[in-house]
Structure formats: C-alpha cells, structure tokens
Image 1 (tube, rainbow, N blue to C red):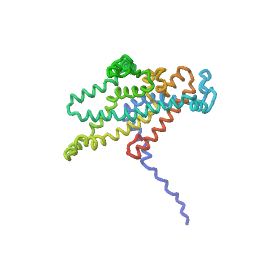
Image 2 (spheres, rainbow, N blue to C red):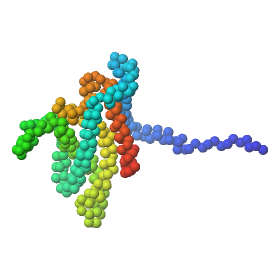
Image 3 (tube, rainbow, N blue to C red):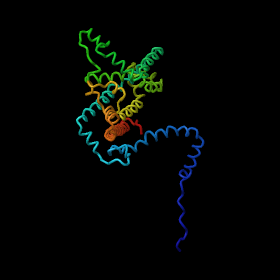
Image 4 (cartoon, helix red, strand yellow):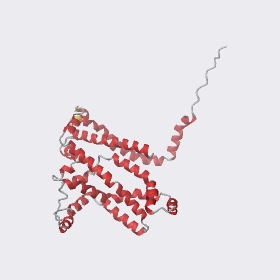
Length: 319
C-alpha cells in the first residue's frame, strides 16, 4: 500500500527566524546610539554618495542651461583629449613623483619620532618634544607658505647663510628644481608631530613585560626597539600605509596652489591644481570631471591592490 502521508515540512532554522526580532530589540535598547548615527549617515549620503550622480558629466558636454540629463553624450572624448594633451605627462609625473617621494621620505619620519619620544625617560623632555613637534600642525597653510617665502627669499636668512659660506643666493621658491624639496620638507616639519600621535598610542599599548624580558635577556636598547617596539606597531603602520596609498593621487591642493608661480610651474603643476584652474576658473566642467574621475580610479585601484597585498603578507588589512 502506497504511503500517502505528506513529507514533513523542512524545519526553519531558529537563528534565521529570530534574527529580525532580535535585531529590532537591540536597536530599541540602544536607540539613542543609533539616533546619533543619523547625522553622519545623512552627511555621507548627501555629500559623498549623492554627488556620484554628477559623474556622468565626464561623459557629456555639460551645459548648465540644459542640465545633466539634457547635455549631449560624448563618451570618452574628454578622457582621450586629456591623454593626448601635451601636459598629460607633466601633470601625471609631478603628481606621482611628489606623492612617491612623500611616501618614501615623509612616511617613516613620524614612526622614528614616536620611537624617539618613547625612549626618552624624562617625562619633561618627552612632553616638551611632543609639544614642539605638534605646534606646526595648527599653523595655517597660508602662514606656512608665508614663512617659507620669507625664510627662502633671496634676502632671507637661508640665503644669507649661503652667502656667508661663500655661495651664491638661491631662488628656492621660484626654482622648479627646488619646489618638490621645499614642499615635501615643509610638509614633514608641519605634520610629523601630529602623525606620530597614533604611533605613540600604539607603543603605549605594548606589554611592558616584553621589554623587561628582552632586557633580562641582554638585549640592548636598539634591539628592544627592533624586536619589541616595531613588531608591536606593525599593524598600525600597515593600516596607515594602506590609507596613505589610497590617497596617493591626492596632494595638498591649497599649499601647492599658494607656492605655485610661473617660474616653478614645470614642477608644481599637478592634477588637482590643473582641475581647479581649468574646471573652476575656465568653466570646463566636463573635461575636468573626466580628469578627476581618472584620478579617483587610480586611487581606488591602488587601494585595492595594496590592501590585498597587505592581507596576504601581514594578515592586516582594512577589510
């Protein structure tokens, strides 16, 4: 006789059936914290994701009178125009070289400063060094460029020392050959103290017993730094390196614009300043939107590659 009983219904996992109500209860329990998220969430939606709609003008001949939707579609014409322009190589090289030299030279300085501060036994001298290196971060960029202009002018203190040593005065601010050195060097002086804060905090989280054990084993101070301090802050270094690479094509626009002049334009003309002068001042919105999109795609690509490499090699990554 054939069995006519219906097969038993598949059991619904309890975790899935209760996940919704459980999440609702958690939100209701901590509603005040979730309400605090509304403002930053709205800010990101309006000012970071909302403007993505306007990226399509990079593929159009944008006409403000017709609006974004009514403007003529031209595809990749603006990208081709930029790639074929005579200034493409100069803009790309200046942008890449300034960021590459900054990454190689400026990135390790805050780490070394944090290690130095961590090794100073006197709290008075340690705090004094921290305060001295923090202060330049809070000085306006306009003031910083003004200080550089005075110090490096032909009649300034630096050139007076050069002349006193028997050399000829150097026009640092008007020389394309000196622009990157002055820009990167002043950035190091301005930001190294502020950037070292997170490394100092990471060093303070290292177990002191590790230092005591290394000291009992006869390790010198340099060996303790190499085998205890540096490995303890490697995850922080990797994360900050990934974030820096993710902004690789972005430079301090305001400072470069203030330092830029016709005599150093060969070395100071970068993508961000070109977008400002061509897009904002000359009104070529579609053309510079295409350049900005190209710049952002490079940043995103570098971020994904470096994050993947860091995850495979050090098991520390953003995601």
